[in-house]
Length: 382
Image 1 (cartoon, rainbow, N blue to C red):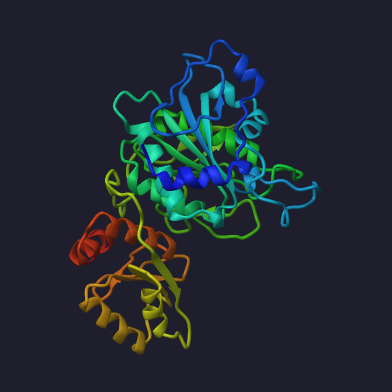
Image 2 (cartoon, rainbow, N blue to C red; image 1 turned 120 degrees about the vertical axis):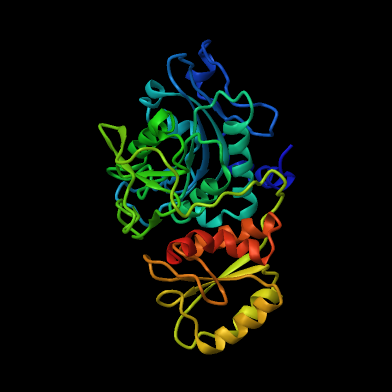
């Protein structure tokens, strides 16, 4: 039903998939499936069923949380995407005390190797599992490598629109490391996904006892477990004794925009170019010649572009080619009011995804600009 391209990819990656059900789950006569079986989703884990618990799906994609090394001291040169979903769940048996769990090993790789085809398919699966009429799935957890976790989280925030929780979780230490953070993170993520108060907040990121909005949260440290933060906007909640709490009532982030991907079969190529002194503006045309349908420039400061770059950007905008200016600075906004499209508070990788979605859903230049700028302009025009 969905995306033959991903099915082909998964078949080619069969050696990476962990498809064996745990013996305990297979032997349990109380199993009751809540995941749909007619959408092309390969259900690779089914735990016991307790009618008093919420139903939480897990999509496993690999990453450090599924990483392994021969040394317990190794937290840098391990292999990501080795441990399968069944082993991840069985390492945290307490999961089965907080939710009925079913899962699918979507793929098992490092997140820097994920691509638009895979994440679009995950988003379609998420909508089918959570938002279809008659769905009895209460929430979804996506286990993910932290390197690009914020990108997948932002995509889910933009396209899964039925209010049920989508929680992205990962780890900064592999499963074999001393004091591995993955098991506790996974337990908290599953608990959060089944929490009614987690609804209507958009996609969430849960790591290190903190809950962040997918719109604003980003990875800010390459090594430490306290890496996902939203410095200006802050966390929206946290965990005490693995139980989630929220600082604010349920609500959507101010600058969120949503898209309907029901008719979208692929996401266009959008490249990110990094601004710096002596930036070569000719790289823009080279990206276009290589197939880019849109470009995000990670500008200096508040999205500043060099004089020569501005000339090229204005030329392309007049031809109807979308170019978005973001900032390479971790915090702050690119204000609207210039010729190019301003990313506002979106960092370059999130601006890239919004531009992909805007192009894929058929928006013209005015529509694309509105998706990026209208809310922020509303504040500036007061």
